[in-house]
Image (cartoon, rainbow, N blue to C red):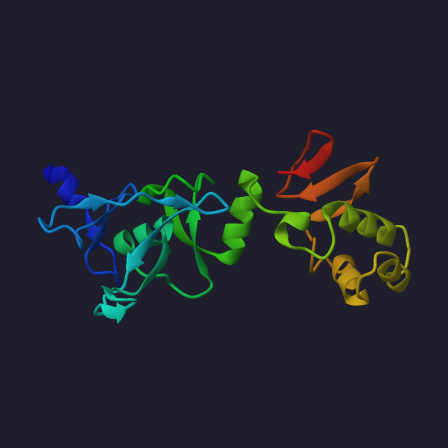
Length: 207
């Protein structure tokens, strides 16, 4: 029990909450006996776990009750803030070393740049691509455009054919968008992930 208590840290900005080094969040706000109550996390659409935490502010009277304002907090961010320190800059993300969004042990977490986070997602195969990422074009369309550009076709006709603005096609040509996607080779789509090539399920990827 003493070892468990030693692993507890206060959650910065949220009085009455504590987190363990393995990402379990506890509250003693609403318990009259002041015993710790473990919160049950919910799962976000990308698999990350989150809980609702009240702020340090005083309760406000709302809808006939005194309520403490708060917000949704991702557990991997809370654990890093408590055990490592605050986010170094707005351009840093809370990253999982093994790519498992449910493994929120501090040893598996680090503050990384957005570029490092994207590279992690590509390496672990968890990065949203194509229409899943809210892109204007699907992955197949972007691959076809890139292939046809490499074969000498012009930006304007392609933009008209795919019903997008010319700058969308130009950004594919210059690799500002879909830069990890390479032209088709022997009818197989090629995805740039790192430095060596492999083929999986008909998709050639550089890993």
